[in-house]
Image (cartoon, rainbow, N blue to C red; front, side, top):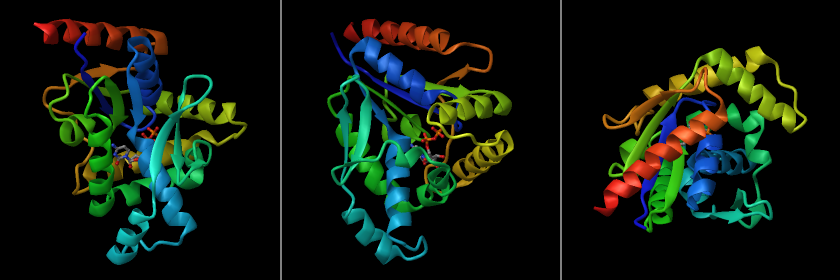
Amino acid sequence: MRKIIIAIDGYSACGKSTTAREVASILGYRYVDSGAMYRAVTLYFLDHHISLTNPKEIERGLTQIHLAFHINSHGQTELFMNGVNVEKSIRKMRISENVSPVSTIKQVRQAMVEQQRKLGKDKGMVMDGRDIGTVVFPAAELKLFLTADIQVRAFRRQQELLEKDKLVDLNTIIANLTERDQIDSNRKESPLAKATDALEVNTTHITIDEQVDEVVRMALGKIVRSRK
Ligand code: CDP
């Protein structure tokens, strides 16, 4: 069967990653969380005190970062940076509070987009992020743009953090999501935007299972049509 690329973009904490992971698992596709890559770069820059206004330091830093996705024993994709599993550390608030400024940097975006395109060259992939349907894979067969009310998004993110034994105040989360959306939507380099041919899905009132079923149904429609 012919394979396609599914691009899922949208605001912070709209359920993109959960949807993308589940859909990939059902279709037997690979899943790439592009946000995890920007989070890993942020972790490296913070740990190595790289100044975001020094292009030379940024360039050098980027050459030192090797990212690879591995599948764990539960079948879940995890990101490794320079051989170390960084899945836990990149989800912390310290990273959430610094990732958007790092993601505005042109050199960072160029390096990540190049790797993302390589990962998707054989298709059969679901990738989620902010610029997947607009910049990384403008020819993706299925493009989705997820939205949801800010209160619902913040509550869902709070639950995710709680599952990792971290209680974060709802207002702190709302402030972080709002700030990131603002920076992501207004940056010069590939801002967060709905591709003209993307389908918008509002996830405020639907469950994750309904969301996943809907996307799988749309994907199967595209796969069947792309065989003709
Ligand atoms: O999961 P959540 O919605 O909190 O965010 P994420 O997907 O982990 O992405 C974290 C941050 O990375 C975003 O707020 C963006 O600043 C940046 N990002 C980006 O610029 N481009 C992408 N394709 C993916 C993420």
